[in-house]
View 1 (cartoon, helix red, strand yellow):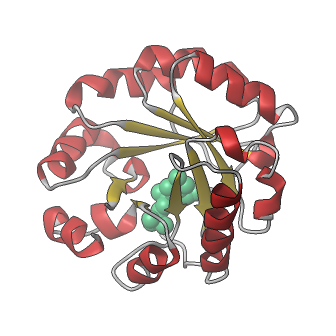
View 2 (cartoon, helix red, strand yellow):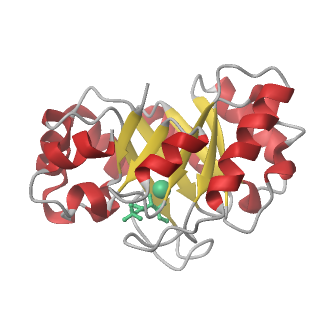
Length: 214
Ligand code: DX5
Ligand code: ZN
């Protein structure tokens, strides 16, 4: 089953509640929330307070992608805001095992994101306990970038890594440049969570865009 996760990074920030209603009605499965701190990535977005304000807009799960330094300082706020997934970047975590434990203890599903140049093998020690591996198919920070094709090989490697450690529950998510041209290859490689910012929010008909990605 494919889970389509529109990223509100490409939504109209002056009308976020309406934008979320619109993709919910259009068949989205999950809402992807890009937290950026202007340090880990050269862009700044929103944090737990905004997410908490958006929580009543939909019953869909909230998938928080933390492109921030010191992600451990955001976990309690995100738990209180009502998110279902928290994904931290491998490159941002000196104490990756500890922050994953912290997420699990908060009762939230935990994921690790990998920048394009970070090998999948860096997750070998933690893979058995993950709920999600997020393969970045662009360099994080901005919507609307071009899909990096070698991300497809990394989806296959992530699938093999999860199988090798007997983790049958974790999903593989892909984020960046996922659109009507690239979605099929991403699904064929084995990803089941597809993040799409511009391909959904840039489309006039969001429900048709979501259906065509699926
Ligand atoms: C980029 C973000 C993405 C972004 C994707 O750093 O993590 O979630 O919204 O945007 P598109 O789908 O336009 O590449
Ligand atoms: Zn993202």
